[in-house]
Length: 477
Image (cartoon, rainbow, N blue to C red; front, side, top):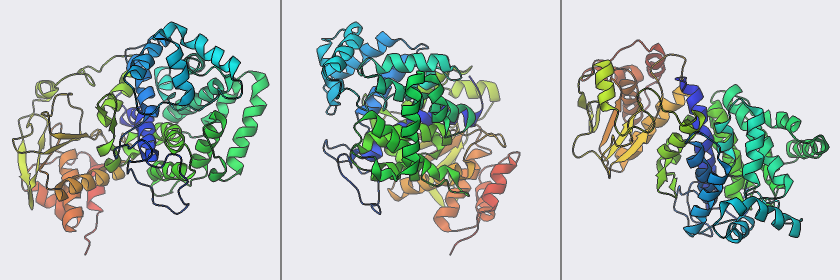
């Protein structure tokens, strides 16, 4: 498993971006938001979703990822997980998917044949977007292996969608996600054309050309897999990448995808899987990650776990992350950290420390700036993991991560929550984010904020990126 934070961030981003787009679009499904409408993760919609709750798009992607996280793309096991999910009575299931899963009578071995028969009987109505919306985990399971990506994408799509159009769309999108993760590009969908039958390449190249030529709002209704893919491409490629803050392309393009209207959650989920694979999970705003949740009782951290394990073929790192229950002993043993937990100057409602300091009684939320075990935080305490490593040049979107996390802490404090902020040693990342928080809350300069934090915790300045970043923050009126 790689220790490159930006690489891991993009792997996690494929699922986080999918879920974020899904939850963002859920409240607008089958509507047509105005071009200037403010888009928010508000929930609601025809199925009464909670704010931040993902729909069947992410639920089915989780079914795939729970299998691929074990180290293999077992198509029959994925089909069995689909059937298990369907048996729970989800409040939203695509019409085509529902018919195929119901007709299989609980036998995953029958799904592909049932889907093929459904297509034969309904050749004009079997190319829905339901397999494209969930396909991202297939890429993560086969990064760098185009042949395996294509084979797996077609096989998993065929479990519920017998029309070759659906499988072809999955191939194109999975190749695009691979290029986004490995090469940090958003145009990999074109390279997917070479993996389609030669007789199908002109059709799809024409459809991609249309997506780049016409306004995103042209691609509605978009329950059809071709139109859904075109809508996602149009939203992504026609949303400008901000020169100074490129990470903002992710939320901006997702908002554009939702504004297209109709099947808003699915179009945004499709777009989100590629955007997250390019810009990383760190580009998903803290405020969105904080509320993301859904079946089967998962939150954002669980999506990270599934994505990382899938890409690592089911293997953990040397510490046991991301499946270990508690890494406190690992940190204490390998780094010799002594417990640290001290109130922040000017705001004792924020306690800063290290991973072995542990949350004290009365803490309502924990913000972890390093990898921790799944049981590190006591039950009932809100937990947010922000993974960036203490190495200059190794992190994606670093300025955004520091300021966005600081803004998230500010929101928690405005709700009256007591917050424990920590990293591994509490000497570099923690002081930097704590200083950024003081800057946002009190308007003081980054230099002054670092000085105040330094009165209670000795911080290392070996990460010149963090120190320089915080020191550039000016005082505000």
